[in-house]
Image 1 (cartoon, rainbow, N blue to C red):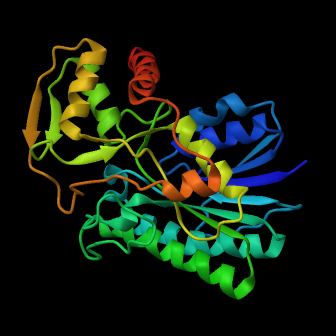
Image 2: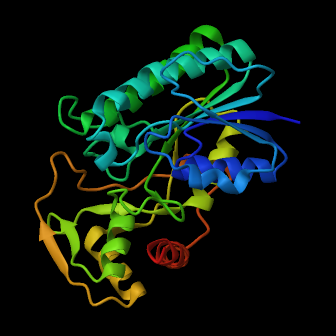
Length: 311
């Protein structure tokens, strides 16, 4: 039976990855320090071929037995988190990546890095292709996350070239779905939380900035296809359909039947004005593209938040 280590397993995407791999007959070791993850996300995995280890991957990792795959998903991922713990964010992208790559080398495991569309910064190229180097402010408040992931990509490629580690790099665009935290700070949980409470829905800037939103099951499918592929250069995983933040807020208000009104607030520093992946490489090389529509994904996410907020 194949065996995989997932760091950041109690996080949003990490927990969905663990569940999918278990469904596919893979034995999973999950690792998380619970800085931003939630143990509730993995309670459903009890009784399966799953072992949880509470550990900070910025410290040395010792794991007995063979490993076939390492999926490095440990990191704060929302602005509210990485602005609160900037040094930990930089450490998990640097020391955590170094430690997990060292483990991959020692075990002969294939390695998948969870990178991000944030490596493109506030892009001057639209849509964003993998050969675009980005427009990142390294000393701005968002730089701790952007540069941590850019460093992680460089470290991953160095282990690939120097040590022959079989590596994969996924540049994950905005993903949403059940198990996001209500206080996550990103648009979809914030809008759902505000609308369900009947509060004003807060939109930053004029709401004209855009995002491209991929439902979590589609993202997980793309990640696993990439992990099992032969592509060792970065691959965008995301939805190519773009919409404005204001349009998203209006959709969520409508979906919840809320009487909330939209209020505008100043745009945060270095907030990207546009975000849309070119997924030509994923389509051609992985045979992958999102299948869940935005409306269907929002419906499933609404059901989750409605139950979450009724607790």
